[in-house]
Image (cartoon, rainbow, N blue to C red):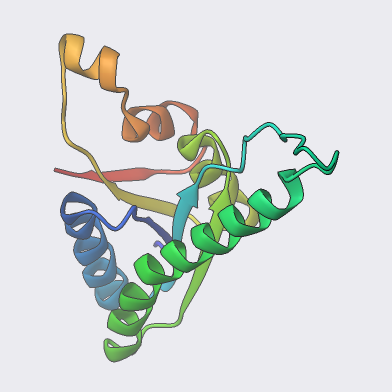
Length: 149
C-alpha cells in the first residue's frame, strides 16, 4: 500500500507525535522512510563596513552552518529511532521560506506515496493568524497526507 513514507518534523514535541506514528506505520507496512525538516533560507541584506567590504558572504556562511547543525540535531534522533526499528530511512534538510511547499516538493522528488505530519489542530482566527503547515500540505499535495493531532 504505502511503500515510501515521508515524515515531516520540526523537532518539536508536537511533531514527535507525527514521527512516532509515521515510524510505527512504516514498521507495520515494511515501508521505506524519508524524514524531512525544513529551515528558512538566509535572507539578510549585506552591509558594507568602513573598509568597503561586504559582510554578506560571511554572515550567510555562518547562518547556513548553524541551520545545518540545527537540522541535523532534529534529524539524527529520528534516523536513529528508524534504524533501531530496522527501517530503511533517509534524512533530508530542505531549505525553503515555505515549509509546506518544501514538504510537498520533497515527497514528489523522493517518490513518496504518503506524507505523515503532526498538526496543532488550530481553528478559526488562531489558524488564520498562526497559519497551518499541515493544512497547506493537505491542500497542495497530490499524494495522501496523514495528519496526527
